Picture 1 (cartoon, rainbow, N blue to C red):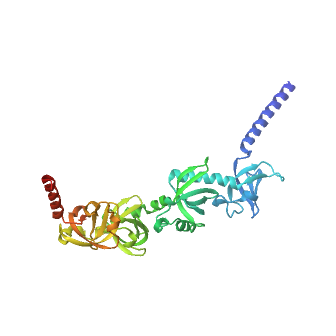
Picture 2: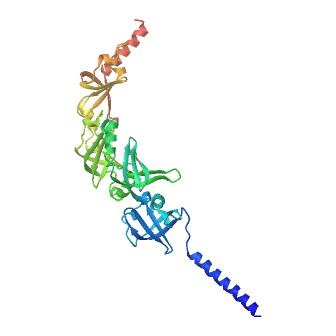
Picture 3: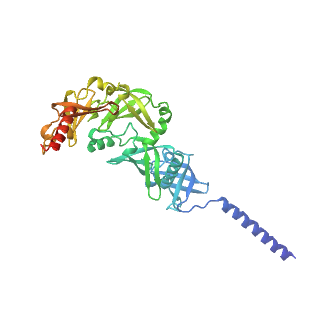
Length: 387
């Protein structure tokens, strides 16, 4: 009997010990290489940071693994709790070898994923510039900000599209921070594309909503391009006056009408998201409404040739009215070229042969309508009589 009692007690004691050991093992986390662990800073210097991992082991971050990928790794002090990645289970001093770099890298990708999903605005730093846009960093993750995705205030609008001047403008952003939204993201492909324009639109949404079509604004010309002029107005907003909306007359170059710094009034004609389109000519009386009071059919007029095209001439009759002389109405002889008879910048006499005020068109010819009709009639009569 005593032997039996002893054996039972030994088995019971062994079972209880194993149970306690198992419970203790579950409480103690045994990390593996690649795991992200939490620790409390027990010592921090410029060369190394030591962490207490769960009160059972010490980890150390040193050397290149101290690179700061996220804000929480800067200016660490005793008592701070941080995360680090295990890179070696035991170094020469029996400590866990840890890395802030990899942990920060993973946290940065997680933050970017969240920013994309929630359309949050993040801050990046511009590192480089190329002809297509800006190379930016989020932590140590490199991304790309295309020129087309710069905010209106930073978009490099350069007259004539001079590439060297555009590049110079892009280089001026190096070292600066930019607030952006994530457009495209792939950790597998190591791809990050961001947009400053989307972030700008998000911030300006409430401001833009105050402006509707028909609203008249006053602003300053900030850029002049071959397709129009950009106007800054209101609370940091910018709109485009297309070349066709600058004036009623035909314009070859917007720079002939406005220049940077000019104050100008315009009417909003469309708001498309963050894009605002304006018209200056809507605030000017349409001169074509009274064109019949100024010109008559078959009247002889004197005008300056603005441009010579293969199909005809663009002619300025006055400050407001520009007309077209089609090549078929210019009295050219057989084999005679339009450039042989007309030259841009010179004045010539013409006749008004058509007027369409609603379409803003006035046609010119070398002869009045009656003369042309009579000539055709005479020609037909000659053909009949065989003369």
